[in-house]
Length: 107
Image (tube, rainbow, N blue to C red):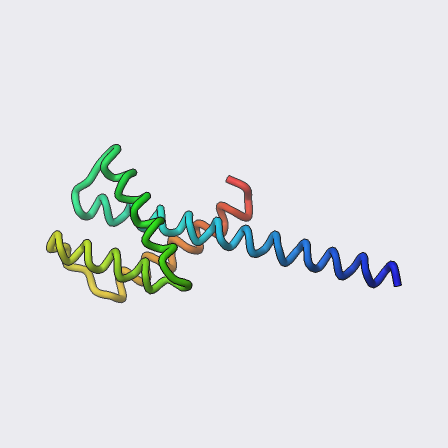
């Protein structure tokens, strides 16, 4: 019975670690996308960093990535940046892959 309990605890610990890493990756993705959008809008330096932080906060509004997409879409539209929904979503996917790799390697 002890071996079974040990395995169960190990699986639970692994699940918790995976969830924490995914949360970090999602937040890192939001920041990367925020910095990308900031550049397109014309923000630099501290303004770009502040904007990226606002994107991270916006991404926490609901589960999934739609809140992030809506924020970026609205902000780009407000600044007359012409990008398709597909281009924005592709950048979000690219940033998530980069963020997951970064979290996985511990960078």
